[in-house]
Length: 389
Image (cartoon, rainbow, N blue to C red):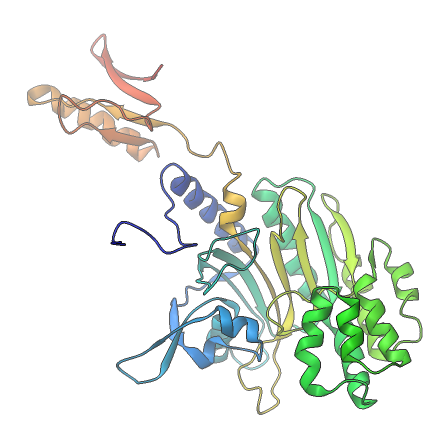
């Protein structure tokens, strides 16, 4: 079967009027980011594979489409994540110890659908990243902007979910030191905790008190962080330091238009986060609307370099499907020839200068399309705009 008129599974066109509504929303989101002082960057869709794979996560590797560059002979990757590209940009451009704020908007490509709920392989990611600030106030800035972005898209009463990668990492370090966990089994443990599978966790660990904490971890969630911390009483010190940091973060977040929940086993993303992590949910949607967290924003992992970074992103296509009322009127101008045409064109020019959308007929037989809401007509020697009924 010929495929020239077909698209691959999970790849779709965005057509009128949805395409214009989406573009208006994209502009509004970028205007919001700019108003918070973030600088816009636009990385390429394709670059060297080793730059795109910022962590050892097999998930990111599997989601990245790979091609051979005929010019260099090196492997290229089609981005499945933009954060890694911003890490490269910051590494190339930042001055030592400076704080940098970046924002972006662009498509990413998945080798396979990320979930059974959302089958697209072509999300459109918008997001922000802050580099060079290790204070918890940087995470609060990102979370507050994430909430404002979600609210601006029309989602009411979102649910903010907070977690901390340090809790899991502290338990893993203690389990490895105590030889209750084989280091090669850690990726499987990570996936088991993500899936909240206590039976799989138990199979990977030797029986011990630390193992009991790890088995308990997936179930430690709720809206009272003080109560949740009691369930980890006696756990390694790193666990309680992470919980304390969550308390400090919570105090800096404006939660007035959202509800707050905690999940101490929240391990979303591609595995490069190492501090607070955050997601926004809504019952109307089957998966997270926005996600983010703290990570190490440097490419020089072998040298032990660190540059604190934090950020969030969201798939704008998901919320744009529910965006309405930003299309605006489309005015149809009839086709005229001779001396009557010049006055009409003057009117069309003025309307367009005022930000109106005007479609000019290309022949006398052309009629307004179903996208046209208004039309220009001549009444008492004056051109007037009236609604098409």
